[in-house]
Image 1 (spheres, rainbow, N blue to C red):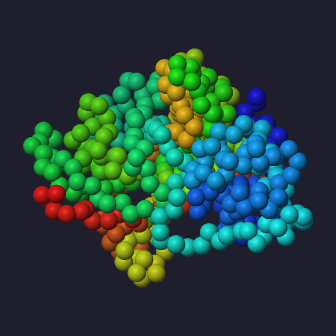
Image 2 (image 1 turned 90 degrees about the horizontal axis):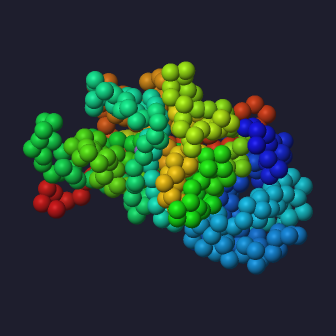
Image 3 (image 1 turned 90 degrees about the vertical axis):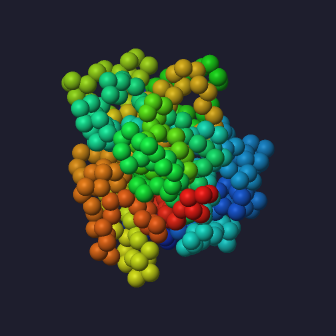
Length: 440
Ligand code: MN
């Protein structure tokens, strides 16, 4: 397949919806997006500031033709997208086309569907995870992030010799994945005042976020089989925003020799609405950027027509005082997923290259998305250069790392002339004080 040919299930960029909020130019969820999530324990599709539970539309007989209840009805009443994502591609494609027809201007289904729409609304309560995630892996795919962090921890040896050959990753913890708006309690752990110790145990003082994009597996491979890099895109169901909360002081003491562990697995926030790969196809860009000096990927990772996604990503911070005073959050960074050295297809192909079986609902995250400029660095460790270049928030206070009460807001969206903006909504979490005392 050529790298940028439109697919049959692309939705006409000129199509407009009768749902008014889906037609606002700044909406993340126009009719061309049709992101999926879970609401009230059932599969829902997002349109503008509304959502529709698909089983309600099925009950109202809004779907027609080839879509029978037997094909897909039982996948809609599950509190996760797993069964829905595992439907044959032909069924999911048909659902997407019929949803576009239902929501299109002039649709005969409007009278049936409009009373079934619910408002997304504003709530401080935790949202819902879109998938039941069996396994979560986190990569380290940004050359700029790896080089920046490496130069802080190993000034003479920032980029390890394997980095441009292997998409480096580690196994995260699925049990502590949490939905957007879940409170994040500052973790306890071992930290050291001097590089060689001795350690003490207490609340982390260097709490950070990591701006990442994750993708969910929709098509499995059997244990012992692999996923060819040129087919890996078709195994991906869709994408969401991920905040890989990180305790830098715990990480610094524990990370050698086996990599991140308790510095990471106290919580990872995932956004609610999964943007399908079909909706993102117009925003594929050539990639990854490699120079003449970079090694050629080994054959199993070599994807000459491979692509990155041009997703603009932003991090904002709002302190407790800023929220009390009604101030807008402060923009901390803005970067692009298009800057990544390793593509989603390469990460997935690499993960399965040893015969590891990827299962429906598995989450693979990109690693911190950082670009070449200071303003595009996707974590505070880099953004404040380990705290040596503090940032000033809108309330006049300085930040080196996160303070209790800070809310971290991540946003992602794709923009391109001739196409409606496709967005991911938000991924939010607020840092809460550590629990108990030192004797806990
Ligand atoms: Mn990470």
